Amino acid sequence: MLVVNNPKFEISAVSPKQYPKQGLPEIVLVGKSNVGKSSFINTMINRKKLARTSSEPR
Ligand SMILES: Nc1nc2c(ncn2[C@@H]2O[C@H](COP(=O)(O)OP(=O)(O)O)[C@@H](O)[C@H]2O)c(=O)[nH]1
Ligand SMILES: [Mg+2]
Image (cartoon, protein in one colour):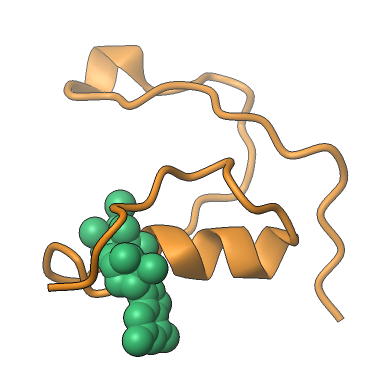
């Protein structure tokens, strides 16, 4: 079972200089736009709106 305590949005980094420096584990999640990546994140961490999802599936 995945247990995530108190998840927070940190940053949408657009360059390596912005990457967080806490040395936490990294996870890669890849998929084309609107495929459900943000919804997947919210499901996995049991939160409705931490990752913003688009209102309409394409
Ligand atoms: N039918 C269906 N729609 C989904 C599913 N997962 C996500 N969606 C919808 O697809 C749209 C895009 O999802 P989103 O998580 O924003 O995709 P992202 O662009 O990959 O982050 C949203 O309207 C979601 O509600 C799913 O498993 N089934
Ligand atoms: Mg998204």
